[in-house]
Length: 315
Figure 1 (cartoon, rainbow, N blue to C red):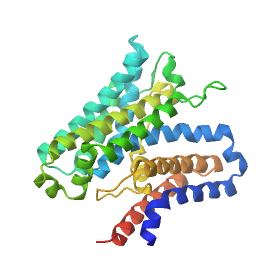
Figure 2 (figure 1 turned 45 degrees about the vertical axis):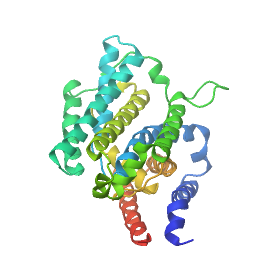
Figure 3 (figure 1 turned 90 degrees about the vertical axis):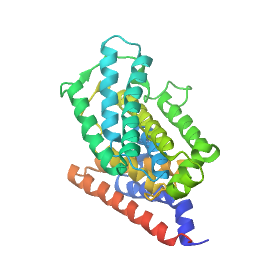
């Protein structure tokens, strides 16, 4: 087996083991106590839920820089709807729906204007963040306590994982099945591998792109529901820069920025690595600017790894 194949298949898991070993040395056994692992799982649930949608986008050779802003907008919409006495389920659906509309706008602009996804989603990142701040009057929105606040909390003894983690596991299985066993999934890989060839083969490229950006944004909206559960408020300033963690999770997990490659198991591991690094650095007492350097270094290394995998892949 070539080195590139080994890295592609086992690299994410080996990376997770390396991160665990580093923090085992720096922090000690207390880093792996149940309470701390729960904290890692809560952050991973937010990053990974958004990263599942990003996996589909990157498989189709796209990118979405508006994910963090969409998560913030979702928390604001949920808080506003709860304050208007809507049911928690309706408020959550409202947050996901608002997010899906942002994704639909991304997809339509990309396909109709023929503008590269980077530029469209960069503009949408600023637009959605501004909309979230405007809706919230640039402040946090307190909301009534509901069962949404318990999504990521430890379940009572004997009741298993928190509901939010169970939702994430189900979503991961669904997205993996979609990518592997459905026509839609095969079309995403075809578009990412060679869009022109996909068109010649009868794939409705524009419709598929609009659909995948809408689905990805809806999953980011669901990540916003989990972010709301963690904070218990609608916060228009939350998740700034989280899109970089989400993209890095996909690339660390074996995805490629050039498209045509990506796996759900790898993305889950990549999201776990990013969350573990963020929490581990904070608990070790590193200053915020050092944490940003560490995160930036990981992102650069992830992109470099992606390029190395491409050069090492058979022609």
